[in-house]
Image (cartoon, rainbow, N blue to C red):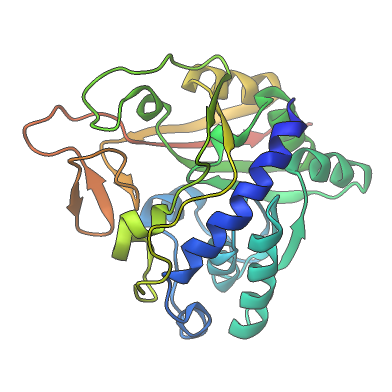
Length: 287
């Protein structure tokens, strides 16, 4: 586990979060009026969350967390970024949608939750969480430990295969999996500006221009096999594994084309490739 690198990533995320939210028009009003930032794929994987205790790990600035709360869930969001959690708390207050938010390294928070005997019906992770995990096996054990018997882990993520491709999506540029470390001097970029209206359902604003993150970032490459193995080793039972030939809100490489519903896919003259991954796993009642 590389908590030293987690701390560096925290600083990068603080700066990136400011840029990301600068492009999103009145999010509180959007949510207050019944808006949601959730895509159909995660809604289908989650199922009915009404009256469920939901833990949203790496919740970022809380938009999806509050969208889950709007569906009737009792939601707790955890993120390492101070800026993200401060914004999430403010968004909760201004929208009138209740949720609980904690600023913490998720590994520390999961350990503390186990000590408190705190449990959840659903643990949820989404869109870009996997590359920030320096120890995928400790992460899976922590999730299993806070799931109530019969509870489910639900995730939607950009396909690990994308990390192998170059910026044009044409060449294999990196190795696959193994927890391999990638370090970037420029840190986390302004992907909301890249995606535009696909990630700003409340309305797109020009916001920050030419954002450059002053902090570096460090990512970890995991394969689907390692992801599934970690969850199985933690005692969870795999129920759903899906691949999607498009990515929600993420133009993964140059040349992707925008599709209805905020999706991006390779152009027609390119092969169809897996761009997203959906998974659900359950904790047995006897555990």
